[in-house]
Length: 561
Image 1 (cartoon, one colour):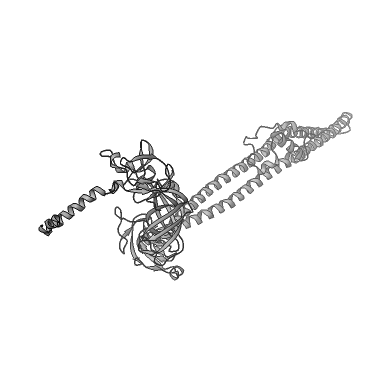
Image 2 (tube, helix red, strand yellow):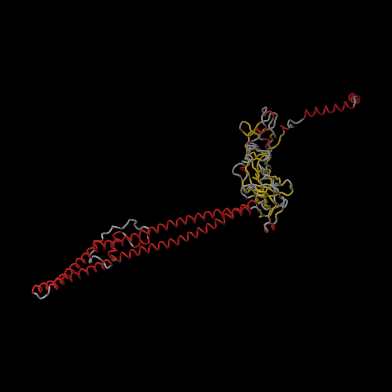
């Protein structure tokens, strides 16, 4: 009974303090050994485990029409442009609505100057074409005239010495009739190549002017000889009669003069035959052959000159054609450049200034607006295709083997979380993306393209989205939180709870950002520590080094159960 009295004699605040101290002592005595964060005990579970890869990205159009400046050379000014955000309709596409108009004043002036040069070139080409046709006609005329002259010269040769002898000479000298239409005729002179004296006999000559002349002169010699014989016979009779006194001396002298005249005529006729055989016939025959030779050489020259002149005319024509093509190409290019100063709508969609992937303005590039200068190939307007939207994401190298083309993807836009989208992987990068390597060389990301199925009116390029890639579903496996597994002495281990935690070697399998599959070394329901005990950590040890190697993925490239 003394204790209650004692208690009644104490102030109330002292009793309250004593009660708190008593409760604290009881908690120290009876607390469980596993209540700190480093000693939390969990049990291994068995069941399905979904292997997923979680990444973040931005929604963008997989296909789009990009209107860019195609004006070469100096930058050009924008004269007109539709407002950014303008909705291009099907009617705009059908009516070829102009979305951008560039300044074409300089190009138009250049076109005028080029057109003047082009018209002059057209005139030169027409002149060259006509000159070529004229040269063709002149060549035809000149060659025909040369062929006719050669043919007539050959006919004169045949007419004088006869066809047989002419043929023999032509055959012996290698002059065939086909040479009259060939450019391969001999160019050596034929003068002195034939000894015509061998043909200077009446029996040797063929029917021709020379034989006719020789026959005429022979006939004259024969007549003169006959006349001489008659005169000599008469003179002999007259001489006998004179001796007998039957004729006068004057009659005798008259017959003597007649006989002498007949003898002189025989000498003259014989000399004429000899002169013809020795001089006139060879001279005339060689002159005739020379004229044929000259005509033949003229034919050869005519053909060669025709080839040369025609080549010159053809070269001039080709030069004029080349200049024409160059000037026409320059003129057409300027006309095309002027047309390209008007940019039309080709697909419906939302007009956005700049390129689809353009985020910054580099160098001297100005922001797209009326009056700003744009360079060649610079994107002015991009019209995304709303029917073909998707997401380009970077998959960390630790997960890239899990991601394959054709896998189903769940997409959640941050602005519309209650309207999830589905998609499919259409492309997986073969090499790491090099654009972002300079920021973090140790992080290797593979660009992966995901096509969104269906359409939404609220879908717009640039929206942030979360991507959940379903990699694999493990139907019945044992798994633990990924923090419970670590590396020790080159082995994968977990720690069993106790006053001195015991490491147990296990075989790890697939993992997510939260859980990891245990293939061997741990059964369902077995207890393990959620974290590595402090006693197993060395001073200054990096916490991440204790986690299993498969889980070493960057925070943004996560996986979920």
